[in-house]
Length: 118
Image (cartoon, rainbow, N blue to C red; front, side, top):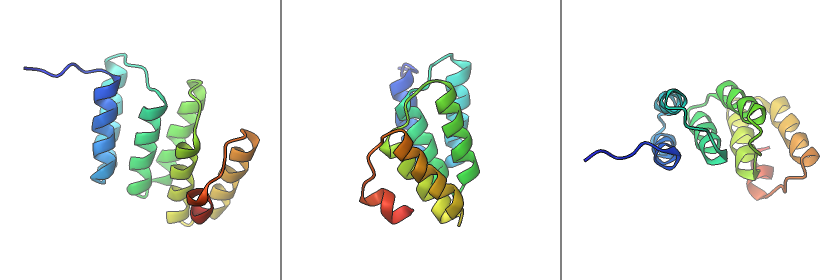
């Protein structure tokens, strides 16, 4: 029996990729979603950005963030925490500070995870 491919199923699979450190597989799933005409939601972007963060791919994470903004999905504290952490792990502290400022502009609450990553 086949599992129906929908946003929830894909988000779960992307999340599993993130936990397994498989950022490339997460991107393959994003392509599957795109070809299946499934719309990305905040959870999709957060899971994929987190996969990039775990894989040390800060530039890819920022590309996803920019795509998220273009689609009008609202970034959350989780989005920014993953982005800032990705930048921190790659010694991109200037980008991390820019993201911290963007959080403030968007009136997104900063938590201890944000502060420890920045």
